[in-house]
Each structure stands twice: as C-alpha cells, then as structure tokens.
Image (cartoon, rainbow, N blue to C red; front, side):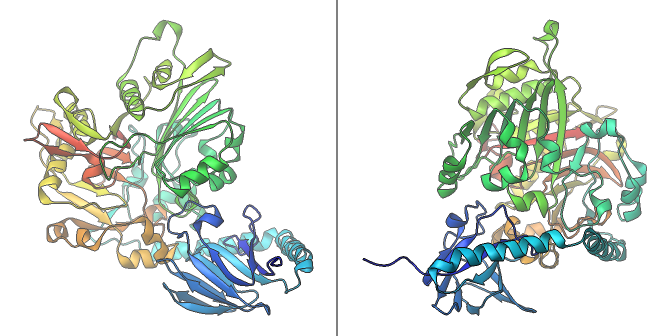
Length: 578
C-alpha cells in the first residue's frame, strides 16, 4: 500500500498589503506534481484557468512553477518581480510570492519540511507569527502609508488635468434634476469634484460611482460599496447578474447570510454552477433564465431588496466578483420605494410596468414566503406591483432575448430607448449634439447597425415639435497604455475584451475617444461601467446607465425591413433626464 503523500509546503493566501488573508484556505503542496487552478481555489474568476499553474516539488522543498494557462503569472522573489507567460518555468523557494493574475490572487510559498508529522505544528506556528505581525502593525503606519499613496496619485491627477480637445471625459452621474455647476464647470477640474457633495436627502435619488481601492479618499467621497447597498433588515433579496463568486459574495457582504430568502438569477455555466450549487446556503434559490438564441447571455446586473418598509431597486454595472467591486470604475443607481396604500393598489406607473414586464421575461420559479407586513405571499413578478414607484425619475430600458415584432417592436433594446426618447422634449442646445457610447466590451459592428443605433439614441423632439436631429457618436475606449498603467496592470484588459479585428475596423476610426476620468480620480481604475449620453458642452440631455455593451446581442438588431428586432441577451438599463 502506498504511504500518505509527503507535504512539502503551503501556499498561504495574502491580501494585497501582503498580510495573511484568513478568509481563504491554505493550499497544501505535496512532493511531486501539484496543479493549482480555478476549481481547487473555489473562485469563479474565469481569468484563472482550471489548470492555471503546476508546481513540481522535491523532498528538500525546492519547487518549479510552470504556467499552464493562457494568462501571465508573476513570481516575486526578494526584490525581483518576474513575469511568466504560458509554459514559462521558474524555480521558487521559501518566502517567494506568486500572483496568479498580476496584482490578484497572491500566495506565499512556505516550506514546512519533509516530515509529515511536523507539518501541522509548522503551519500553525507560521500563521500565529503572521497574525501577530498583522495585529502589531501600528494604525499610525497604516494611515501614513495611505496618505502617501493618495498624495502621490493626486499629484499625478493634478499634473494631467489639462485634457486634449478631442478627449471625452467620464461623466459624473447626477440626479435627474440635480446639476452641480461646480463640477460641470470643468471636467478637468479635480478640485471641483473634491469639494462637491450631495445632500444626504438626495443620495438615494442619484446615479453613483462605486468605491475603488487604491485611489484618493476624496474620489470615494460619494461612492458606494456592496455593504452600503445590501444592508438592514432585508426580508427577500433578488440578485441578478452574469458572474457570481459566492465565496467572495458571502465574505464581502456578510449581511447576505441573515436574509431569509435569496434568489440568485445568474449567467454562469459549467463548473462554476456546480460550485454555486454545492456552496449556496439552503435558503438560496439559483435560476438561469432561458436563452432561446445562440450566443446570448444573462448579462443584467440588478438587485431587488424587500424590506418591511418597502423595496430597494438597484441597477448597476458590476459582476458579483471581487475585482468588479474593488478595482474598476463602476456605476450604480438605487432608490427605495414604499408599499402602496390600500386605496392605490391598482395604480401603476411607467417604471412599474417596465419592471414587471422585464421580471416576467426571466421566468424564475416563484416561491412562497411569510412577510411580517402582508403575511404569506408568492414572490413572482406580480408581487412587485405592491410598491409605489411614482417617485421614480428614471425609465427602465431592458433587453430580452427573442424576435420582437408588431406591438412588441418597441418593448425592448434600443427600440425601447427610441420609444422613450421620442416622448421627450429637449432644449434647442441639444439639436444634432454629440452622443457618447462608453462600455467595456466591443462587439462585431458594421456601419449599418451603428447608424441604426444612432437613430434610436438621437430620438426626441425640440420645443417647436421638430426632430432633435442625428448626433455623431463618440466611442470611449481605453488605450493599451491606459491598461498598462492601471491599478491592475495588464490584468485589467481581461475585463475590456474585443477581438482585434473588431477594434481595427476602418470605419470606427472617426469615432474613437480616449478614456479620461481625472475629475473623479478614476483614470487608473479601468472602466467596467457602461454609460451612454447626449451632451452639449457640459450639459446633458439624458444619461443612461446600463449593463449593455456596444453590441447587437445586447441592444438588438432590426431585421425584415425594420419590422423585427432580434436580441440575444438579457440586459437592464436606467435612463434619466437631466
């Protein structure tokens, strides 16, 4: 009979400040071959391959690392930081640090000797030492380090304040009736954003940016983290998203464990779904909506949180994974709505109709719950008619897979947006004014479809009843240099995907505009936010926050002499008049 495998060492998970991350399990390393990847790390980040790296160790503790996946790996040994590409090899020794994705998923290689019996003692000794180091690090040192980092980045931002004439900057989201002149006066004016604040009674009524690690404190002054969104006495939660990392979600938002009923509507597949099913709490329901057309996804990012006082509706742009809520520029809108009065139960609104129509398309399995306010109820789309959305200042624009025609032609996708804008009257200053398309993934486009989309985005009428007129689109996209110098380095490029042939199409050249976000301190936080707008100078006609990238799959494409709209994916957006 073969003996037990000999433990050679451990991979100890680290936080980005190089302290031990106790929320992640250690990975034992045995003599011989070891495979490290997405499955045994229990993460859903698909940048990490199932067989990401292999470690080949000998009894003396020496190890050779081989990159098996397509993404680069960083090995830090002393002061040296070496990048390894696919099939590259390197020797690692006790104390070396491995970054499975540059800047992310850090592990320290620690040898524990070849004697199996002593391994547990060595493990615990190492962990106690690391924990003491963590506790003993003075708060003064921490504060000084953060201040120095913030000041260094702030100096960089101030040095880059002067924008090129052809650059388009990221737009600070604002309430539909709130126009902060001190911010809009100059998008290059960093000081304006630093001293701008929104009254607390208006915060629930605005588009917000999400918190980003590693940027100055002033740039996060009005931003939100996931704990700011999912909080309080939530009775029922519906979480809609594409990617879901359940391990991070439970640690990043502990309040989720307290919610009695959680429905997760997702777009995952394969091993990630298996992991979700295996590790979900017993009171969680998982649902993947039907995808009737090939190459479609469930890409919508939204939340419905039911409280004793009402419902919180959230539409945002982040996957439910660590990097999206910490390292990238993201946007979010949320508003709380009360229960309807008994005499107004049948009184609806445009927002309610749009929301319930979209929820019906998801076809989730309804479930029964007992709510202290209303007793036993079925949680289905019609349940959400019980709330008063009359205070909403936005319109919900959704995409649903299918071939939409006849009376349904303007129910979804860019045709829905066209219908909503056609009902709006705009000031003369927006006549033929430019459009901005800002997103994180570029589909395979052609000039005909881009013109089709521009017709929808340019819809609306002037005060005298004449058409608003077509606007020239500007397509915002980060450069290679932007990605290289970002908070995540080249790893950020994984969330800004597009085949080279899509990006290099000649007809797109006249539309390109660089990503700039100096005034909100996010130039180095690569955009995963998707936003579309029409503007003149520093004034906005409308602003749309969405999960939809620039693609036919997301927005839909007209067919059959413009009588049918074909959409592949689920998306959700919010359009606000400024």
